[in-house]
Length: 347
Image 1 (cartoon, rainbow, N blue to C red):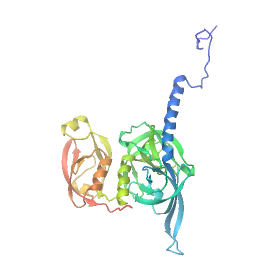
Image 2 (cartoon, rainbow, N blue to C red):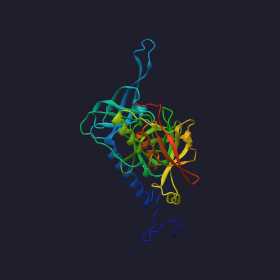
Image 3 (tube, one colour):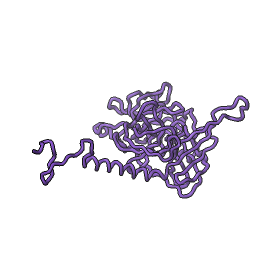
Image 4 (cartoon, helix red, strand yellow):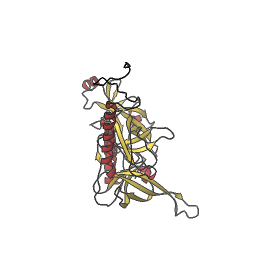
C-alpha cells in the first residue's frame, strides 16, 4: 500500500525527493542569481586595479626632513580609457608613491591628480595601453533590497568578488576630515581592508558606488559613496586638482515629496533634501534654515537630492547672497543665504 505522504509518479510508482534537495524553482532561481553575479563580475574585473601606496606619516625625530613611511594597499576603478582611476582619498592621501597593478599583470606608477578628503574620493592617473573603463550607473535609481556586487583586492587578494543587497540608502558617514558624507549607500556585500576604492555595481555591471568603509567588528555593515556624487567630485579633481566648496552648513538626505505638495507649490522635482542638522553660526543657520526643512531650490536650480546641492555649491561664487527655497510645514519659504568658502581645503 502506498503511503499518502509519498509523491506518485505518472506510472503509479512512488518517488522520494530528499528533504534537503532544492526544488526545480529554487534551482532556477539560484541559477539566475549566479548568472547575474558572474555577468557583473566579468564586466567589472578588467577595470578594477590594485593600488600599493607608500605614505608619509610624520617626521622622524632623528631627521625631521625624512618622514616615517607606511605601506598600504587599496583598490581603484578605471573610468576613462586614457588612464584616470577613481579611488578613496584615505587610500592615497599623503602618498609618497603609488604603484598600480592591472588585472592583466601590467604594473605602472601613478600620479595623484586630486584628492578630496571631505568625500573620501581621489583620482590618480597611469599611462598604460588597452585600459577597460567601467560603465557608470545611476545611484539615484537604486532600491533597498536590490542585488549589488563588489569587486576589490581585500588583503591583497586581487579581483575578489562579493555579492549582497542594498541594505539602506541615504546614510551619512563621517569622513577623515570630520565632514559628514551624505547619501551614502549601505550594503551587506562583504568588504575588507583593501576593498577601499573598488566599485559597487548592479547586476548589469554598472557602477553605482565607490566602496569606502566597513564598521568593525559588526558583520554586514559596509558603505559606498554614491557614484552620482563621485562623478561630480572626479570631474572637479580632474579640472582643478581639488574641490572648492561654498559652505552652507547643513546635513541632510534625499527624500521623496508628496505629489500633492509638488502640485500645490508647482515644484520642478518630486524629491528634495531633508535638513537633519544645521551647524551653529553657519550661512544656513544665519539665514534661518531649521532642522526638518526640505530644500527644494537653491540659486534658481531645482534640488532633487544631495548630488544636486553639491553641484550647485561647487559652482557658486563666495560672498554672494543666494536665494534658498525650503518647505516648512508644507509652506514654501524663500531665504537669503550669504555664501562663504569652506575653510576645509582639499587636495
